[in-house]
Image 1 (tube, rainbow, N blue to C red):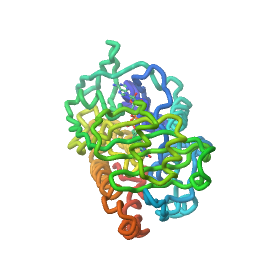
Image 2 (image 1 turned 90 degrees about the vertical axis):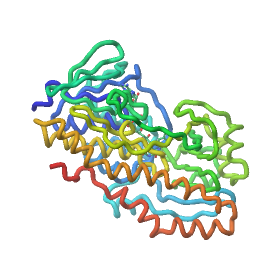
Image 3 (image 1 turned 135 degrees about the vertical axis):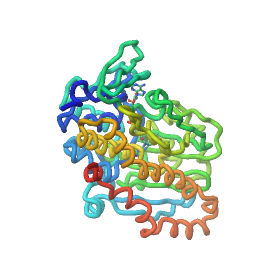
Image 4 (image 1 turned 60 degrees about the horizontal axis):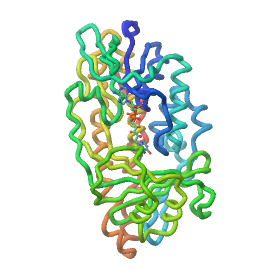
Length: 401
Ligand SMILES: Cc1cc2nc3c(=O)[nH]c(=O)nc-3n(C[C@H](O)[C@H](O)[C@H](O)COP(=O)(O)OP(=O)(O)OC[C@H]3O[C@@H](n4cnc5c(N)ncnc54)[C@H](O)[C@@H]3O)c2cc1C
């Protein structure tokens, strides 16, 4: 196969890069991943993987590995920030499988990353080169030469930038990512289940909505721990980091006046981390000749539809299928990938941003008005319109010919 020598090079062993690697290796296409980190550590907390993502992972043979690490919540609920009144958003579990043919998973990011890494290494043990940051590249019609931070170079048939929101490959392509701080900040952490009130230990995902903020909680590791994300507007702290620690006092102050269940979650966190939400307009283009971007490097999004990792997973499947379909013409394969993915990913980025206004609406300050507002905005038919198009997408069936 023309792409096997030299192989496909991927910058970044994150969710996007590893999914792509597995999808390519299963098609007999050789891959080398250059990962900047010297060792792969557990970063972040929970991830929600919708049926659009789980369907791909099952197709890639990861179903059994995922089954032992995921939680399948029974339902998703919306709760009022102050009164705690609860509305069912939709059923998950068997209902999700019946409607979309694939499960809705909640998983610790570290567990998921390990499953992907093991899946890739089972197909090619030395697929990931650690401590190998990609700094730039040059390309001609026969291939790409990667410039590595170490000063070394590596030859590849194509280079895929799966190197995350601060992508070096994107910078080397000369593509502008147009970041703008949203004024919104997120708290995140993991709460131990023991010590939480009984009601909070139920196996449901919950969105608490309030004026100027919202809180998302869901079970991980069979309900032994809970993921907590607390979003607040009107902050001046534009540091986009997943590892910046904050204090319990700051976090509690940001949710002063919220229902005691929210306070209980915060007090039970192992460590509150804080992170600034940076918004970015969808890029006009992300494929240039034999180089292209995927995952957060191509279409970073605010997390309000819980679709960033799902898009990275979908990208991996569609891109591998495009590369397989045009082995003799990599630039055409990468352009086709861009064309096939641009509209959907831009819609997700834009609709995620719109969700902030819905979650944080000022009307939620008044419990009487809030009840009517939540009943209307999260009516089951309205919710279906908002989410079904995300979950129905089948990256394994998109026409790549
Ligand atoms: C708080 C929060 C909650 C989220 N919740 C959800 C959710 O519920 N559901 C969901 O679908 N998504 C969620 N997301 C989004 C999701 O985590 C990201 O969209 C996803 O991780 C993107 O994967 P990626 O592989 O593109 O990037 P990353 O996971 O960031 O991986 C990039 C990799 O590239 C490496 N790298 C960076 N630079 C270089 C370089 N120069 N050379 C080589 N390697 C490099 C990095 O070390 C890293 O390993 C959430 C995100 C956040 C922050």
